[in-house]
Image (cartoon, rainbow, N blue to C red; front, side, top):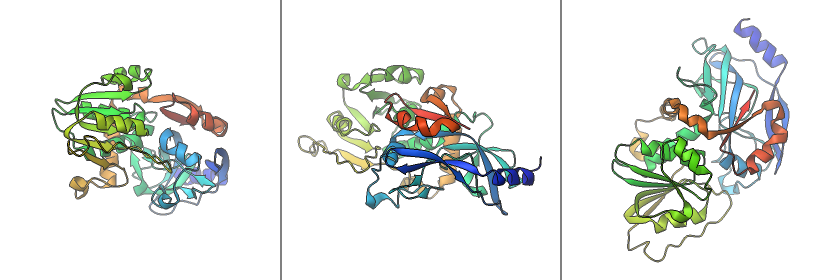
Length: 332
């Protein structure tokens, strides 16, 4: 079957996508696909990943009005006031379009959808040594890479990463590979010790963390963890807030030794490459590097479950509410 026949079949049969119809409600809806034009590709989904932190806030309707435009993702449809089609971790196979990509397995920042048409420059072929099942972590790895850049971690630094979710674990994983670093992954859930161990990273429960650190990164979406990072920051340490709280307020203890220790508190967000790298690192180069960094089989530990796409609408709320969820994979 040639690419044009495949394209016709997919378009005639439409596709389906996961939509959030209102806060806390979702459903599968049919999607009409346009015919691929020159420079386009038709992608059939293989897997997508649920990014629990961000998608939880979108699903609950907690995206602040002022952030709605900046939070729009590639290929998103609708609006954060609902209904909205949202997601950004999809792996598929190119079935029609650009000849160089035809038949290739690719990653795309796309919502959960069984097939779609986009321009060829929006998809990135997977490295040969990366299984498509693991490639759903690409967006999370890209975020973690950006956080490590923003943190400015150097050889020999003592580093504490708060939050053993997907992004926090990937940040700790990358930081631990910088020669001479002493990295600890911190979480209030003792069950995350096994996850840290599988990645070769020392673990500490929140209540038992000891000592001072040169770089502290909060990826827990917890204001209490950020306050704890301030407590364990050494003189002129760098604290990176990588969590996004949506419309929630966070209070911090900025009295005490915050000023006398000359601490730096900065934000990190994947929507911009850090200034020191911006002239050389495009978004495409950063994403390609994130895919390369996923070659380690140990990272499969970050996939905590899998659901068939046909069942995802009924399963989705429970996946988000389960505190044990890391990256939940959807199989198409």
